[in-house]
Amino acid sequence: MNSGGDDHALAARLAHDCGQRLLDLLRDPSVPQGWGLETAGDRRAHEFLTQELARLRPGDAVLSEEGRDDRRRRLDAERVWILDPLDGSMDFGVSGAWSVHVALCEGGVPAAAAVAVPAWDTTFATHPPSRPTMCRVGRRRIVVARSRGYSDGRRLAENLDADVLTMGSAGVKAMAVVRGEMDGYVHAGGLYEWDTCAPAAVALAAGLHASCADGSPLRFNNPRPHTPGLVICRPDFADEVLEALAQG
Ligand SMILES: [Mg+2]
Image (cartoon, rainbow, N blue to C red):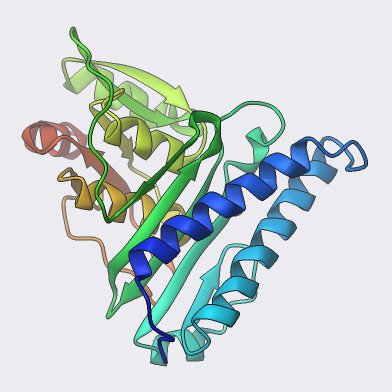
């Protein structure tokens, strides 16, 4: 049962408010640093999002990186919220490369989503869609995961006329494309749906290309919540990027 209201606005509000709570945690001197901080951030963000969804959308199923997967319930559900309460948690308290992902899927496709990047003081949502705010000239820029700088980075640098950079957090990388800072984000290895769902939904709503690494459409709420690679880029760049990946 949907208790009513605008799912786009709810996704944006939850992602933003969760980001603010995480910023409050960083300012709290009683919270331990290091691993303790990361664990506290994951837990507090998960609790906030799931409690709000239980209150406001009690009939919907939830898949969260930090929660137990009630697979039967979510596979039977028409509406499933897919959450990464703190994406890039290794950077939490270290740099601004962390984000909050909130997405609603209906029938396996995103219906509403938001990604909050508190370090940029910005929450990107599906409605109203985000528009580029940064204007760049010069060589095209692709961003990849730090863990894939060698595999994806080398392949793209060899096969594409573009500079390749690395950055933390799938959400931050994807939103760097949405805001026009990067021309594409590529991850040729597997990811979880909580990494990909909200960023891809926001990118698609912004008019960008978003697909699996082989170019096939993204589908969510799969029995195994796994995405076989991700490409988010300007639509006029998609064929070149997908070809470069196919060249291996
Ligand atoms: Mg996380």
